[in-house]
Length: 303
Image (cartoon, rainbow, N blue to C red):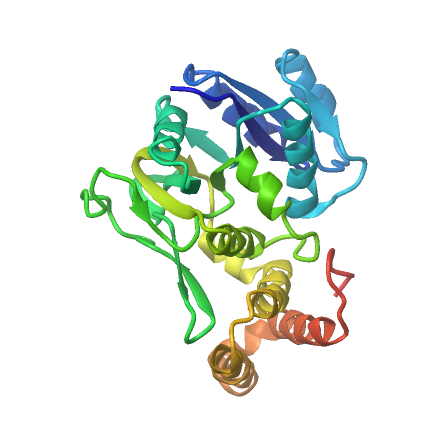
């Protein structure tokens, strides 16, 4: 097995999760790799705490919250300066199986046509329930989804790497040569949809995206809490439109997104009594649509 990997772990005001992630990565011994923590403008004592616990791990401080995109782009530039062969974007709220990295790199090295790979991701508090086994894009409706979401893993995705439309940025391994060819993550997204658009760019450049079923990690995610967050509603709404634009998706997915999905959701949240508690989310969604129309991208202003 060849190739040196730089693992980018992005931290923002959550050193506890980051330290647990680094402890998990300490058990990964193959292939050769280096971990870099990018502290994304934390307002707490994160950088000092992480350096004290892991003095051999570089911590790059951005000085401001650059979002998932900007923080990881700082890490990608670092990977380029140290001449890495591969880069792994890894959420700090994850823990990994010791062999996951070797399996990801091995899948990439099966063919020079493989550009990006990702593991099976499980819920941390439900270790055999899948959160993502790769991602799929429904181009006719302008929708994306996680494959295998909420399914108990019973081996339904086999053992061999399999093609998918995208892998989530929660854990995404890319060839640095491919990154050089397609460019960095698009900073207009700030957070959400950026890795999906990146994977589409990789595909258009002639490379494959693979899900590696046997590579496993666990994600400390709460879908209910995320769905309720107005910031998530904002970025998911605005960035889906930006995604459709950048990928030149065509009229049909635009009509489905704006009228069937967004229009129906807003009407339902407005008229149906059981959704009267969605006022904040509705305001975030409307603000996102307006910001897209005003060409206001990047970090969300205060709602």
